[in-house]
Length: 183
Ligand code: IMP
Ligand code: MG
Image (cartoon, rainbow, N blue to C red):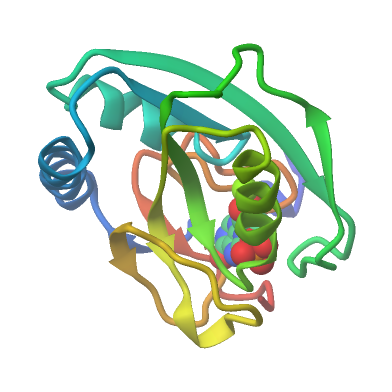
């Protein structure tokens, strides 16, 4: 029996349940398919947070796709980004001449997305669009274009459906709020 204090804490308070996530992801996929130029969509997920969302998104996307990932680490405390973004695993496929869709779990300060957009733009994609499951506009520190947004969220720390707190909760099938962690 596990007697860790952590394991006895209340589960995250539900914000979006599985049915809401599924319906919204399908609607987003249709919108993306309608708006992106004809041709193969080169989908790039930002690890690790985007892996669950991206898996559902590409399966709902009625387009020819290529899928790739990159991994980033931003220096800072557990729930606060510093704005210094390190690429810990770069793309495996070239994006030059591709219609790129960059997929994020959440855009908070916007610093990560801005950094990635600058990096990608230098590699000469045919087009570059951004999609995030969650958007926290109240926390934005830099102006960054987000073309497709699943849900706007208030200034709470959210977990589940790929998003973590200290690497936990990524496997929750819903999005919930951690009451104690300060975002
Ligand atoms: P940024 O502040 O927009 O650069 O966001 C950086 C990253 O911080 C996101 O991609 C997430 O991985 C993480 N993050 C920001 N807010 C939350 C949250 O509420 N829950 C979980 N992760 C978050
Ligand atoms: Mg992330």
